[in-house]
Length: 301
Image (tube, rainbow, N blue to C red; front, side, top):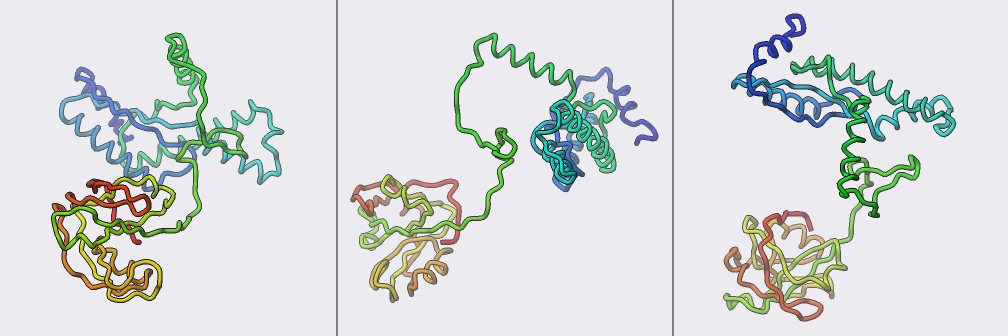
C-alpha cells in the first residue's frame, strides 16, 4: 500500500465527498502492540473503509497518548537500572526523555499497524505531546474558567506515594482476595402457594454488614429455582432437618458440600411465584418484597 501511496490516492479520489470522521481513542506510546491493539485497530479500519466505499471521504488520522504514568515509569526503570534517582534529574531533562521515548514507540507502533493493513495518515498523526495540542487543551480550560464552569473543590482520588501523583482507576492493580461469605434465610411471610409458607428463601453475600439495611431479595427470571427439604445436617447451627429452603438449582451442590447438608428436591419455583413473595427480615422482622434483578449473576456459594 505504501509503494502505491494508497492513502493519498484515496484522499484525492474522495476530496469532494462529504466527510466521515472516526474519533479514535489513542493507544499509549509505550511498547509493542498486542492483540488488543490489533482487534481495536482492525475493527475501526473496517468501519473507515466501509464509509469510504459508501461515498464518504473517510480520512483516518491515527493518534497516540504520550502522557501519563506508563511512559514516566519506563524512564524511571531506566534510571533505576543506571543507579540514578529521578529527583536528581532536572525536570526539563526528564520530560525530554519521556518525549523521546514516546516518539520512538510511535514510530514502532506505526509500522506495526501498517503491517496489519491499516490505512491512515501515519505521516501526520496527532499526539497529545504536540505543543499545539497542549496549547489547545490549555485554551479550552481557560474557556471553562472564564465561563465560571471551573471551580475549586475536593474529592477523594487514588494516589501513588511513589510517583507522588494521582492515579486513574485503570492504573490500579489489586491483589486477589477471597472474601468471607454468609448465607441468610429469609422466612416467607406471604405467598399464593400454601406449601411455601414454611419455606425459607436463602441468599448469600460477601457484605454481611449490609444485612440490617436489607429490604429486598433479587432473583432472575433466567435462573432455575427449586424448593429443597433438609434430610440431614451435620452441624447444630444453620439449616436443620425438616426445614425447606428455596434457592437456585445451580448452587445446590456447592451449598450442600459446604454446609454439610443432604437435600431432597421437592419442586420447581417459577418466576411468577417468586414475584408474589413477601419475606420477613431475618434480623428485624421487617417485611420486604422480592424484586426482579435483571443483572443478577450466578456465582458459586
